[in-house]
Image (cartoon, rainbow, N blue to C red; front, side, top):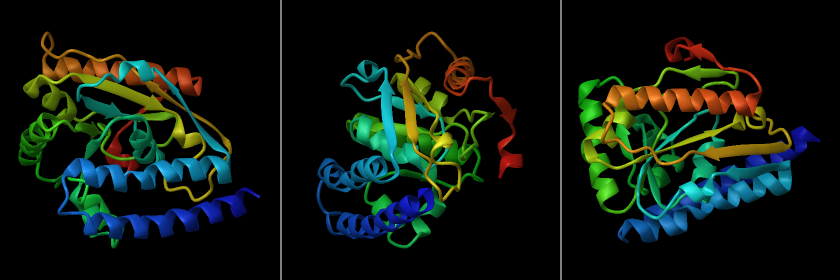
Length: 247
């Protein structure tokens, strides 16, 4: 039954991705918030489909910590689920992502219409400067910026080392950080086709001010928070995993 449900969801997930991606391209001349309001319905509808078809539900703790003003979202990365769920929970947002995603037919086109910060992860300091410069531009326009500090999806039970980009962006722009943790890997595993019934819990932390901390100190504080929340959600402390080995 899980295989059948997962297959039905996969088909609908793929078909709706093509439809909304084409729609995103057609709406490109419109302002970002208008495009986002339409294209983000794909993510919201897929969270609904995941619930109704695969019995994978979303439970949010700390929703009151979001507020009205833009912030930098530092989120745990376990599967594709969080890229959908963040759109269902948070205000209009853009993501820092690898530019290779633009090369995926249909999906990449729709993604590009949402004004993300696409970087070459091999570019080092140039990529970091790009995140800071474009991140400030997006935040100033009213959009939230989502960063996955582990840089790649990490299986449940593990935590990756945090890149400094998110902390540097927050520190140099003065915008606060909101950390987000979840346990999506138990229902939607990394690169997994099967979707296992259950309740995925998303924990939203309180905003962290950046004025009294260095970027390195803020990054460590974020890592410690994420490690603690993952321990609570999964029932044991995650093992530190070098993301290069994970890839």
